[in-house]
Amino acid sequence: MTEILLQRTRAANVAAFYDDFFSHYPDWYSLTNADSEGLESFLRPLGIWRRRTATLVNLANAIMEMDGRVPHDRVEIEKLPGVGQYVANAIQLLAAGTPAPLLDAGMARVLERYFGPRTLADIRYDKYLQDLAWRVVSCDKAIEVNWGILDLSAVLCKNREPLCSQCPLKKGCNYYQGNVSERLV
DNA sequence: AAGTCGGGGAC
DNA sequence: GTCCCAGACTT
Image (cartoon, rainbow, N blue to C red; front, side, top):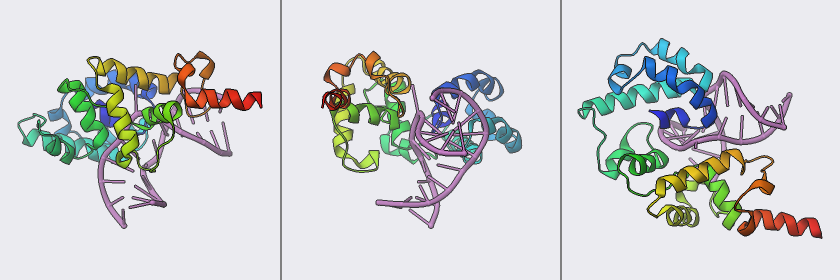
């Protein structure tokens, strides 16, 4: 559920929202028979609330039809409403404990600044970015690495005005080194 | 491949 | 006032 709330929404905003939401909708079953107007008004402050309401209810129904259990098969997981590559990876990483990249706009930005830009517009089909992300998180501390990169993207490696001077990765970062050499010219 | 959803925080 | 966000879906 949390991953749906996080789609195109700043993590800090969701964090402030999280406890209240789960006290009202603690499980999938509570969403299957939730009053849709009540759910919509609840989600409105987060944005994308019409789509998110529909997605949450559809997803809850789909999961409850499967005895309330999320399928193990990767292909079946991605068929669930509102579940794309990112959420499927999140399930694989956090629920199954198998390394997978939480490759969102933030991680893509960090990787591209550090290693160099992707070739395709769509993250999901950019093989360069995919390979890079999988390689970076394929270790025994995959969860920590993922969260570390995402935190970095939100706090320091922001889209606008990144705080490169405070960044622990600036030494090997293409973006930072490029800016330094530019300044010297 | 491009358009759409969306309120709110950061600037 | 402008920009962008732990994406997924439709066209």
